Image (tube, rainbow, N blue to C red; front, side, top):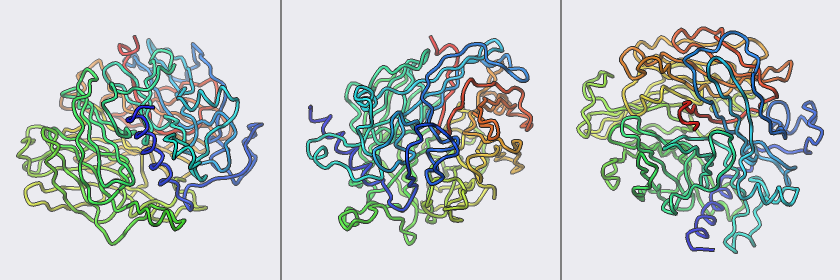
Length: 517
């Protein structure tokens, strides 16, 4: 095994060993071999619409209620955990093998396909016919760790990104896997010629103006972030180590025209706690949250700006402003007076991933839309809530990433999963809502611009559609909803009936038709 590969695996092992919180997110119980969704109420993430499916299918000519907009031409691909075999011991939702669900839309018609992501670990288990890897809630096999092998599997199950005509499946603590967009088959590890030597975030950012992809990784037992820049052709440019003071969990980040901004929340890693048998991660309410503002042109130039303690999983966007307006003309590059950031803010690290499940979620498990304003000139900050609705998984029109924008779309999540969507209007603060019918749950809403117009043109930012997978609780069936993002009418313009149930998952991407080969 080469030195880079061994080092990468050991670092990934440290990551997941550290992330296993003994008092958070855990589920247990017997495996649902019969897939009876009413069994084992103690195993929340193996029942209901969290339960996995095993069939991989491809179906053309899906039934549609309503009419698919003719401007939609592409494929929505969504990732999520879907364990192939009975787990070894306790099951954590993050353990499941990645499964991609693709809905191809063109000429008012739709087709569906789903595929497991065949990672190295998946292929080994498939050959053995059983699970070989312990989950995050189990003690790792230290013999494997000492041998330089990762006892945990990289399931590539969290997100997907499409860049330089390559589709990548992502997992926060490991390497990305390249996927063929047309049939969702797995090509293999995307190594970038071995140049990226850090875990690859599930939330890279693509600059819509330059075509660059920016990514990062963090390592729990080291007080650094590693920031990497990839050119529009998909070639690695450079990686920069950024000191952050203490080992800190950073799930997401934001970019502007000239900066990359990382929320350094006071969720710290302490190896001594791990040696005492405690969770190595602890949230220190006495410490501030800091934003590391990194210059893209010279990433060694870093400014730390403090704000009130909080925790952030996902950021919507950030942009530079000079005079108090949010217009593109007000951005003044490296001389920007302030940076505005919008995201979902928790009071502290959430105690569960149940999105408001009253059985084990506390009030501070709720995230609300929030705006931070960072003063670059004097290093100060201020912040305020944009809304009082519980919301997560924020998305926007991607052509506005890093630039001034007006709208954002979030899932409303105070039930089993999301029960609707919130459209933020950052200009008027008059927010609107899509309310689903009783018995419907939804996932992340992905904005798809109407390409019959210039999506970057003033006034057309919200001209397009919001797409999301739906779960019908009563019938245990799934569909894909399409809503008009401009009117934000709760009635979908079309609902595509999917051939089987699609379990709850994480993040997705829209691939334009021309990117499908």
